[in-house]
Image (cartoon, rainbow over all chains, first blue to last red; front, side, top):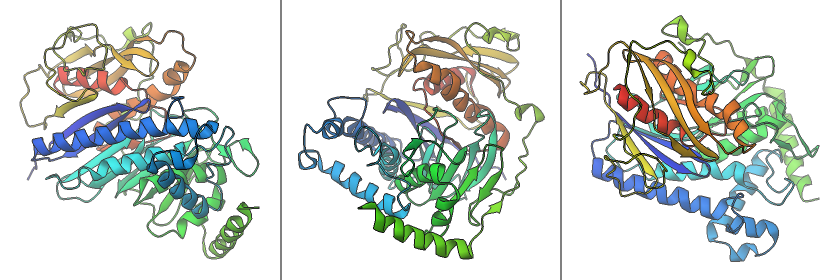
Length: 255
Length: 198
């Protein structure tokens, strides 16, 4: 028996990128429109507050020392608090305070924002939803009759092709040098360098996944062992030679 | 040092983990539906995009029928924009069993509208054979010589292609990868796909 699946894709252009939102088998168009509107507002608000490209954003002003943390919107302190936790979880490998140019929580914010945007769709009559913020994915549910989304991870040496397909439950973030040039900062050596070509982290919260993927990129195996003992989180790395390593629970699809 | 206790805790946790943990090498074989999809086309600039398979029927470039958002600068008029949200664009992919009004047979090429992205304007060109996408290329890009757009050309756009191309061969719903996505690419692509009835 074939089930007719319907997928609705929406685009939100924000943060210098495009966030795609896919709704699966949505039976409430008006509700979806209201949720989209809230998600759009939320993402634009995050961009206004946290953009490091806009000189006038509260984060930019904080970084320059123009204003104190107490003078920023409360979500700045919230995010920095979450960043501190992620720094502890990663044993210091994820460290927004070590970056040259002042505190930069960008490595956490994109995932955190996508996760919150996804929450706007939870009450809807859908079988599942995906928020994909330029490759960092938050989701719930799946196509009809499933609780996972088949998700590809691109090859770092050839983004035209896939390295793996996983059965995604909740969130997945991938970090690596492959597509942005050297931007990953090693807080211990204080150099821009990464240990692996691609680092993916799957788990229940995309902000944490995002931060841990950044940490895994620069820390390699040292961070892999930390993620393995984190409840609900799993990881996979691809090295420069294409060798892949994963924690036992990483949900690679069998076919 | 503020970092020391954190590192120390991390080291203890790490050490304990190392003793009882070893990562496993992963062996994966991806089975694509057809072999042609395992090697996806390379992104080409406007100058070389004409090297894709010559279409037997060519649908004219999308000019006036696609929905556009208020913030998306488009040189042509919009006739289908009903959204009240300035930068949220919505498109619906109809299930394969649903009949669409667009022609869906033969090899066809459609160029999406010129849309704004972070560093300028671009449009994409999509070639399809029936309902199967065979190529996604950049039809035109105007970046005003911004050096950062070099990154877009070299990295972001090639990243965006596999989602369009491999989604059909691997039956996947999404793609993850380190990226700096070019806003606009997907938008132009989506319009082109809609024109193609895919």
